[in-house]
Structures are given as structure tokens and as C-alpha cells.
Amino acid sequence: MGEETDATLRERLVTAGGHLTRQRCAVYSYLRRARQHPTAEEVYLGVKKEMPRISLATVYKNLEALVNCGLATKVTAGDGAARYDIRTDHHYHSRCLKCGWMVDLDPEAEGALPELVRVPSNFEVSQYRIEVLGFCSDCREG
Ligand SMILES: [Zn+2]
Ligand SMILES: [Zn+2]
Image (cartoon, rainbow, N blue to C red):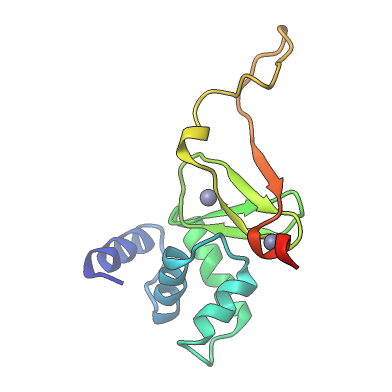
């Protein structure tokens, strides 16, 4: 993790009343590098490679601390599993129905509500969620 990121992370954690610990740093940096949105368990397995003694409970606690500081978001998908996302802006996801693999949708898919959705004329939209479901390349093969 670069020095700038380290400083930003420290500043935001301290502002939110948290601390920058080695574990928290490792959890944050794993989340930044992750190619998809991992579950707490996946983060645990990844971070454990660098810190063999870290526990799932510690990883979970640190993930929640990052969410509370606004450094990550917790995404609860349709399958009920909580996943962690380094992006904190409003955006949408695609999710594999078999393994739960979750990635951001293309930025072009964001913005206005797609025309394929017909909203009743007497209904005022305040927000909406889009989740694209299907099968990732790994799950399509076997
Ligand atoms: Zn899959
Ligand atoms: Zn995302």
C-alpha cells in the first residue's frame, strides 16, 4: 500500500474514532486489490496468507470498522451473503448465482433508470437498485 493511501486511511480512521492497526491496514489493502467484492471469509483467507495468526473475528471486526468510517461499503446481495466493496459511491453489481462472485457493472450502465423498466405514472422514484444475475466464466464451464 502506498504512503498516500496509508495517510488517508489513518486520517479517516482517526476521524471516525478508530485506529490504524497492522491488521486493519492489511484488510483494507486486500479489499483495494480484490478483483471482486469478497465476503468476510474470503478476505480472511486472503489476509491470512500475510498474517497467519489473524482470526476471522478480527477480520470481520476490521471490515465493519472500515464500513463505519466510510472507507468501504457492505453489500448484501439477493443471496443474503454480505460482501465488502471498496467503492462507496452509488453503483450496481452483477453477481454469479452459483458462487456469488460479484463485480461492479460497467459505469455506462449507471445513471438514468433503464428504459426497459416501466414505472407506474403515479409512482415517484426516489431510488432503485439493479443487480444483474447470471453465471461467471468459471461456473459456466463445469
Ligand atoms: Zn460463479
Ligand atoms: Zn461495487
